[in-house]
Image (cartoon, rainbow, N blue to C red; front, side, top):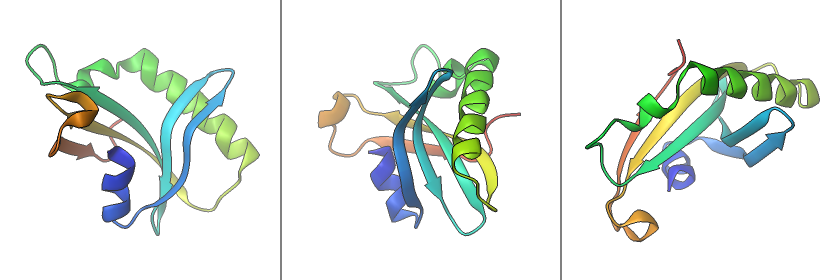
Length: 108
């Protein structure tokens, strides 16, 4: 769902499920200026906490280190950026119209 959302927003999907010994990055996409490392959070609803709240400082650090490994293997002139895509889908992957929130430059 998140990959299709990015395609519709004119991002080019570069990789999905990139893994190294430090961690995993759900999606890597690019636009004209950025190479975007995307953490995707799927939740049924935001009743207990927003999906972004599950991307804590420790998780952000692991994603940054993993992104550094990716960039060492795949040099680019594009500016790296870290986004979070929240997908709220009450019926999980069977949800016809999930609510998707794209938080650009989400890591502070």
